[in-house]
Image (cartoon, rainbow, N blue to C red; front, top):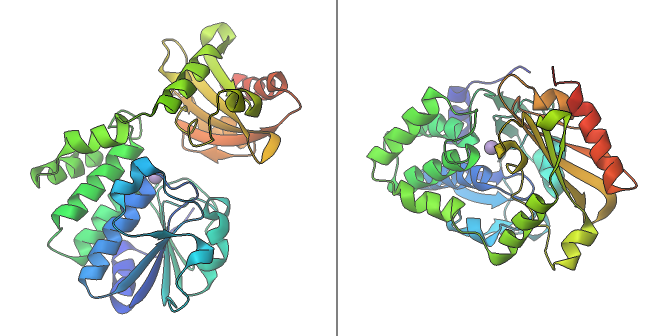
Length: 326
Ligand SMILES: [Mn+2]
């Protein structure tokens, strides 16, 4: 993975362009939205026309990060012809979803923090040591303007906190805290933002948590924990796929578990199980997920298995995970 551009060069290109399309990843999360809207705010201050797009609608809980519409690709204003397209927090082509075609309508830049070999833009800039894309956007904004606005500070704090699970994950670095510390020094209400990000569960999401806990299974002397939610289980409780979106941390939060996986059958593709995997330092979830049609970070990764039954899906994941258990 090599960058073919520097952050200063990205800033130079941004300064020269006037109509910029910012692309967030599918099922936009707090990091991709905060990255896009912080950058949008700064570029608008510079007099540019900015539009944000994503393949999927923004979940209600994250709408406080968006002060403008996030356009679905087929709903983009017809009179908007960008002279630059920038993707933020998008690791791969598949994460672009229906925004895939938009990447090639103008000169393009990819800004990201995921380990990925897919360099789909003209200019690709990845910092895989960065816990969040928002941290890279923080650096970029510091090149673009000496005066970060209060709103931009709030967005960047939210993006950083979101991707680090409130500064809890192993991706957190000294720089993560230094940036957050600066943002708090600018009077960001961190408690309020973290409450909005992490303390706002709906009753349906609690139902999803109960389901995930009730279906936990342990393997390899309790070193591997897996929970799995099928379409049938989800539909019986009247839950949407959004309701079960936030279950990835549950298995890894258990004492002695070193690899935890959450499997979810895809609503539109029965028999396809999406895997979210987490691991303790020293164990490589990314390597396991590479064997499972996916990949990701060392301690947080994802993949996909196709199986006839829930049990078969769990077996495939456990067998792959066992290769990392020493
Ligand atoms: Mn991210």
